[in-house]
Amino acid sequence: VLIVAEKDSRAVINEVHVGINSLRYLSSALSEVYVASGAVLEHIKVQLEGERAIHVGNIFIRQEHGSSYTSSVFHFGGATVRNEIHPTLAGDRCEC
Image 1 (cartoon, rainbow, N blue to C red):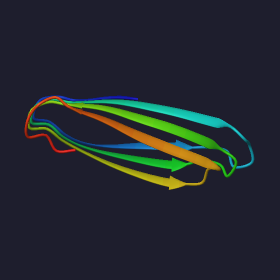
Image 2: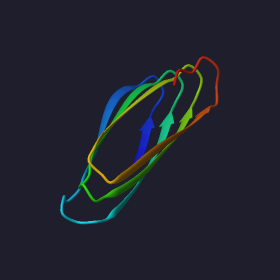
Image 3: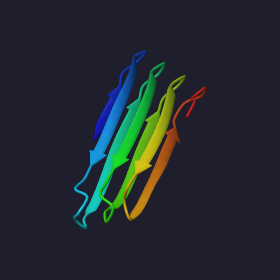
């Protein structure tokens, strides 16, 4: 998933992962997020994997001057679940 919030924009992004309950599988999710100067972005990730699933997620964020990024992650299901967030605050007055 690639998310680009342009200068002074505002957005809410809902990302949903749904799997099949009876299967054993790997879900490897990657989101790249760019938040330009003055932009405000709320990113909501909902993980609804099957009970035998392995979910590994990474979110890489780059924020510019005066931007705001909020991440909320909700996990339901999965045998093993991991999510990592990697922010880069490239300007001053960023909120993450």
